[in-house]
Amino acid sequence: MSTAQVAVTTKADWTSDQEVRWCPGCGDYGILLAVQQLMPSLGVNPENTVFVSGIGCSSRFPYYMNTYGMHSIHGRAPAIATGVAVARPDLDVWVITGDGDGLSIGGNHLIHALRRNVNLNILLFNNRIYGLTKGQYSPTSEVGKVTKSTPMGSVDWPFNPLAVALGAEASFVARTHDLDRKHMMETFRAAHDHKGASFVEIYQNCNVFNDGQFDGVTKKQSRDEMMIDLVHGEPVTFGADGQRGVVMGNDGQLRLVELADVAPDDVLVHDAHRADPSLAFALARLATDDVSPTPFGVFRSVERAEYASGVGSQVMAASEAKGPGDLGALLRSNGTWMV
Image (cartoon, rainbow, N blue to C red; front, side, top):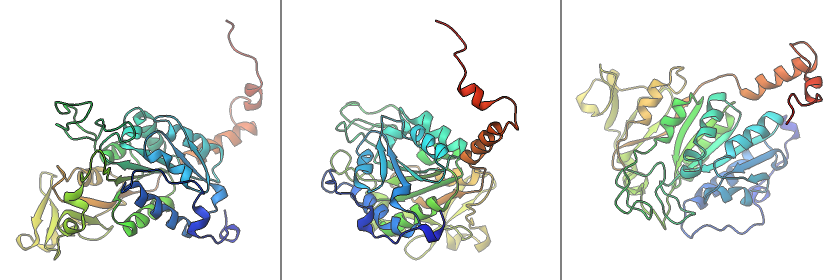
């Protein structure tokens, strides 16, 4: 869609008339507000925008956006959104999912949407708990997590959502959190501007069933020392006075150091556009727990062929009889077996 065809909108134009029904204090409110405030500046119209969700607290999201949308079934949002994006590549398609919805029953759909590089903006709300079903452990809950379904503590090793996305060769991978609206909006904008599958993990607090899970990193009093802001082309440093940094050892491992102890050239320079995802993967696994310095921002953003374009080209070639077979005849043919 050209810029001339885009109407001037405000947050009100993107906000539905539905009452928002999340628990008071839920981190989902902050994410919703960030998206609603961002949308008027993206150069798209509400009637050409689609939000698709699965099941979970986060998946109520489409009700609150004045756009087209679908509250689908558990884990299937990436599959349904893939159909929308391929059939209507002119639309702006977002997927809203959670750590339970997207990484348990929906894990297979998620990784294939990412590897295919379907033009989707996938926002995964990670609160490390099942909130809608009242507090069972999730695929991202830490080992030893005591919940209603793990009264003696979880023995499952958790998924690292960013590592999963990078393992699927996602062309855009980022992380943000629900307590910084500006950072969320910047990250969502970058995801939207990317052509292909964009995956954003959002640290999101569930104040009822898993309150304070990320306080040691994302609370205002912790951020300076615990949040590592990734900026492409800039040295990876952090700390209240920028006194700490990240270096890569001869063994290929990333380490946190005091800048006073290393040469300036030793500090890792972030390269989000690096074709090889190994550096982004190492950064995704830098934090070992919830009280360790943790990277945020865009980990990877590379150009790769987008899925719908390839499919569309094949369909066009087949319909014009430039390729093998006759697509029209196939679609109108009889069954190939009898019962």
